[in-house]
Length: 126
Image (cartoon, rainbow, N blue to C red; front, side, top):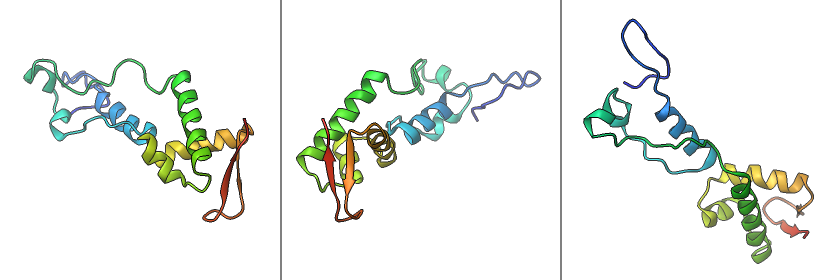
């Protein structure tokens, strides 16, 4: 089993790659492959170094967030009655990620929602 801690007596090094991949999937809507075999210590050695590669940079760059915000606003302009789940599906990210970005867009004054939640419309201010 992979560990998120070090055990010096047992010779088990800390390995958080699986946890990082899991949380990137959960929080950022990424689609890192998570399989039980990746949990085994030494899996990288068994398969010649192929394992869970989550890279060095955790998160989305500022330009990536700006691009997603722009794409969200375009989706809202194209269909003012669209839902966050439809936007998430169109952009290939999680609904929760879209909710966070839309909250920031609202706070910054770029978008607002009129009327009730289900029958409302998006207004995009450019």
